[in-house]
Each structure stands twice: as structure tokens, then as C-alpha cells.
Amino acid sequence: MSHSSSRFLPVLALCAASALAMPALASSSDAPPTVKVQARSAKQGKVDAKLDRPTLPAAREGRIVEEIIAAKDTPWLIAIPAHDGEGADGGVAGQCTPVVSTHTNASFEGGQYIVQAGFAEQEIAACSYTLTAADFPLRIDLCEMIFATSNATVTTTTKWSVIVWEGTPATGTIKYIFSSNGVDLPHLVMQPGTNGTNIQFTIDPNDPDQMVIQNDGSNTFSVGYRIDDHNQQTQNPCVTAPPSNANAFPTTDVGGLQQPSRNWLFGLNCGPLGCPSNGGWASFAQLNTLCRPSGDWVMRVTWTPYSCQTPGACCLPNGSCQVLNESTCLAQAGSFVGPGTTCTASTCSAALAPCCFASTGGCLTLSPANCAAAGGVSGPAGQTCSGYVCFPIGACCLPNGSCVSGVSPAQCTEQGGVFQGNGTTCTAGLCPEPTGAACFPTGFCLVLTQAQAAAAGASWQGPGTTCVDANANGQADVCEAGRPEDINGDGLVNAQDLAALLSAWGTSNAAADFNADGVVNAQDLARLLSAWG
Image 1 (cartoon, rainbow, N blue to C red):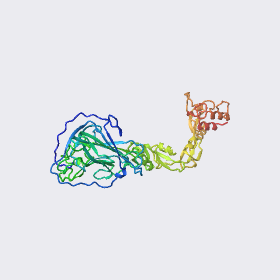
Image 2: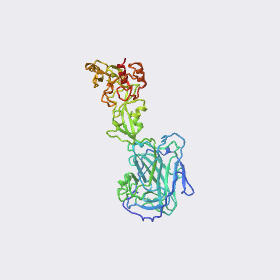
Image 3: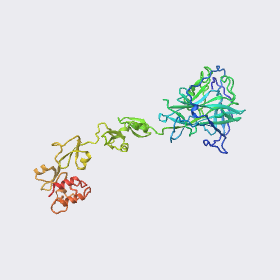
Image 4: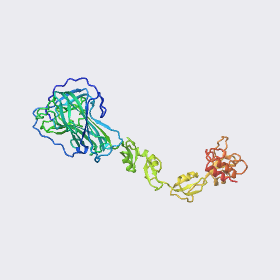
């Protein structure tokens, strides 16, 4: 398509188009004929060379020739290179879901297409596809492109190649080239008339040599189809276009050009007025409007990623957040928030907590779920390991005013005490004198220390007791007649009362819940012991 000025052939009359189902690599009595071929293994198609750029005389007459056609169906030319059983290059893509990338809205089963009838030998139609970094490496499973004839008067035979790049065609590296030879890979043969054929190129999934694409840093790969030999090429296609009634050509769609920067043309060097100017690679966006195709190439590629992970927010041990896939996140000792999540100011602060490991005393900032899975002990959510103390040990002030050293917060709580902090020890005055209900002869009640109660002539009821009036009779329950600690009412607080209290331990039994806090616990026990006798 190395053309200079506009010269359109007449647009063909359209006929009704009908879709045709295309089961992959299958045929039936109703389906169009298929050609299944065997060819060289994938590694024989690998190259690292750059494409030659043929130089021809400068153009004297334009040759842009877009012809709209309608194809009732598009038979398939299916190319499957045979493998030789030798070593693999790419491994297995696993159970990831295949993905189809395309820029066209055209049907590959039949419909309307625009025949790019100015396309000459050695010119290439290509598309580039930009993905995410997480999609690489990937395996190319299937390449497809619609070729068509327009009112051909003869049977056409077209020699073709499929080319795969890492990166764009203009700046990337060619990784694979497969060319038809009429033996291993069949040429494209089409009968007279207006017809379309889908050239499908695939690698046997059992072949160890797959088309594997790595990320060259652009997050892009490209696929192109080249016409190696036309059925009837003119002597100078820069001057006279290959005859449209004797050749097959690649097609674009009728839906309008949607991706001008991702559709590509490698054109012959027809001089500064050629298309593209002086030949070589150009995206459709870079082509002169007089020779720019009006639609996207009718091409699509099916590929499978080797990693099925969807990236998400990862909270790293230093508290920062990065969008990574789960395996990369965990490899950096991070906490993976979830697939598809993003980093916000509160992502990591809300999702993480310090996670302490008893075997080492060490700490990692993890999500509570990951901490539990790793066998750690999770701390308060929203904190990090910075400034957090794992497994603190210190002094504990008990309800009776005494002090115990060298206990954990949990051990202190079990005794009804108050933990004084990591590293603390029992010293004089550390634990305040306990308070409790003091009953005055008048029936009045105040919460005082034992010394204060004695100084006021009140009867101190024990540490932790309160002046609650649960029965609402105007007098604190603890100060009513009788001794609540004498549970069995025999006039003594002794072992029988202790046994009754222990049997009610952990319940809300009112007879043993002396301080009326709703549970029989250590505070009630302390009061019973203080009233012993």
C-alpha cells in the first residue's frame, strides 16, 4: 500500500451476509471446507533479524484501492506447525483463562469487509496489543486474519507469512516467523468470485515449542501477516496496483478506524510520496489521510498468560502500599489486600496489624488473616510493628492492693488485676490501696479504702465491693442486715460458703455475686475471704 494519491475502484454491490458458526479445528457437512496442515516446529520459525525494506522506483500514480465486499462465510485455512518432540522453550501456561485481543468489530464468520486491494508483495498488515505488566510472560494460542478476493476472474494462490514481535512492529524484536511453502504450510488458494478466508495460525497445545512472549518493557506484543507472493503482481506496484480481480488481499472493517496508533502497515519504498513516505513501518495514525485505511485490520489474537494473578494492593512491612500480584507481595513479606484493590491513604492502616511470633519474639505487619495463617498472634488493627511490643511482661496490681511481678497482661486480667506496663516491677506505692463499700451505722454507704472506713467507724465490705442498691429499697445491698458472704446463712463465713461460691463461679448467681457486677469472679472471692470467720 505504498501509494501517493487517491484512486478508488468502483465499490462492489453488497449481497446479504449470513453468519456461520466456526467450531475450532472442527468441520461438519454444513461447514465450509478446512485445510489442516503440519509444518515445521515453532523453534524453526524464531528469528532475531530485522525485516528488509525493498526499494522501488518512485511512485507516479497512486494505488489506494479500497473495495467493500460482503462474504456469506469465511472458510478457514488452519495452520498447525508439527512438533518434533525436542525440548520446550516456554513451559505450560497452566489453567489461566485465554484472552482474545482485537481492534476490529467485524465478524470472523462472514459479513462485510473492505479489501485493501492496493496491498503489494512484501507488505505487512500488523496490529499491536498493549497489556499490563502482570500479563507477561504469555503464550500466543491463535492468530487470525481475514483475506478476501473481489470479483476475481481466476483462482488465486497467495504465499503468506505470519510474524510475531515483542513490542511494536516498528521498534520491537521479531520472535517468530512462519511462512507458507505449499508443503508444510499451505498457500492461500481461493476460487474465482468474491470470497473471504480466515487464515488461522496456531501451535499444537501439546507441542513443547510454544510461541512465548516476554515483556520488553513496553507491555506490548504485535502480530502481522505478510504477502510473500501474489497470484499476479505487477512489475512496479508503486505505479500500478496489483490487479484486484486476480489477487487476494488483507481486509479492514467497515466500522471506522478506532485504533489508528495500534494498526500498522509495512509499505514498499515508493519514494517521498509513497504510503508511507519512503516505505517502512508506520501506524495508521502516521499515514497520509489520502492513503490511510478507513477501518481497523480484521485481525485478532488469542493468548494465555502464564500467571493468572490479578494485581492488588500490597501492604509492605514498612507500612507502604504498592499494587503487586499476590506472589510478588508475599515474596516481599507484604500483606496482599485482595485482587483488584488499589492503594489509598487508609488501605494499609485499616487492613494491617502487628503480628507477633512466640518462637522468636519478632513482629511483622500483616493482615489478621495472614497472621493467623502464619501461626502468629495478631495485635490491634490499624497499628504497625513500629513501637509495638510483642509479649509484654510486667507488674500487675491485684484487687486487694497487692502486686505481682513478671506476668503478662492476660495473666494479670485473669486475676482481676490491672497490668502496669511492659518492663514494670512491683515497688512501694505502685499499686493503689484497694477500695470497697463502707457501711455506716446509719445504713449509709461510701466507697472507701479499708483505712478510711476504719477511721470513719464504718464497716468495710472488702475490695471491689460497691454501694449498688439493686433492689431499690433505699439502702446499699451490701449494707443490708446480715452478711452476704455467709451464703448458707449459718452465721459464719467458712468453707461451706467458699464451696458455694466456687460452684457458682462464672455465673450471675446473685447470692455469690457480692458486688453485683453480673458475674461471680475473683472480686467476689476476695470479698468472701476478707469476711472469713
